[in-house]
Image 1 (tube, rainbow, N blue to C red):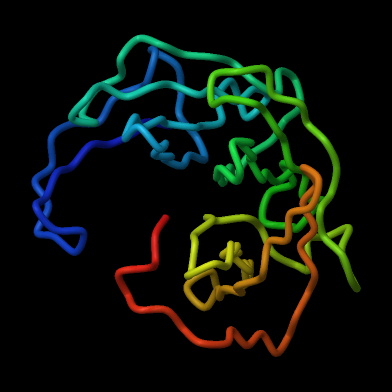
Image 2 (cartoon, rainbow, N blue to C red):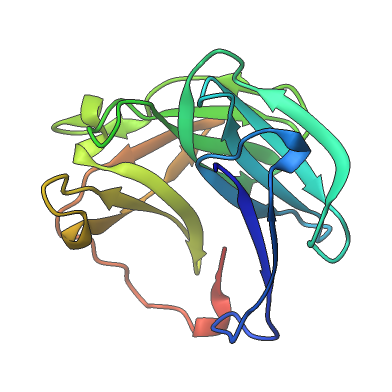
Length: 198
């Protein structure tokens, strides 16, 4: 199958109306994420070709179709679980390697624009078990007030329904990301819900 699906709603919590499923650009669509830029343009970021490559495709104005503008990145690098964000006019993608349900080294990429030239950099994780991404895998990036946060899946292969999550700070300095492990994460002065964004 390896398809993407489209459903629409007037509210983030539904109800949703299913529109269709399809293969973007007539290629399989594996792990994927969506990203919305400052100008409200939106993009589908997905692993393709058996996870060997990654694709970025701009959506049309109502986000229900592809616009036709597509770029291949990380060619032959076998990356999955993309999570994209922008900070101070630099664009970043956090990705996972491909090792089934087993954790592996996270890597991040950087570019001057969504459709620009992406450079795959290094593992941003810092702390015990950093080479295995603390036993997790990137799921999504979100902003919580002034903080940039990473949500990670922690898969339990013996019972996937009991898999859990962790949330960690994403620190950025001179275009370099670090993600330290923190078992007792506390965020001071939680913002109003209106300040939380993807």
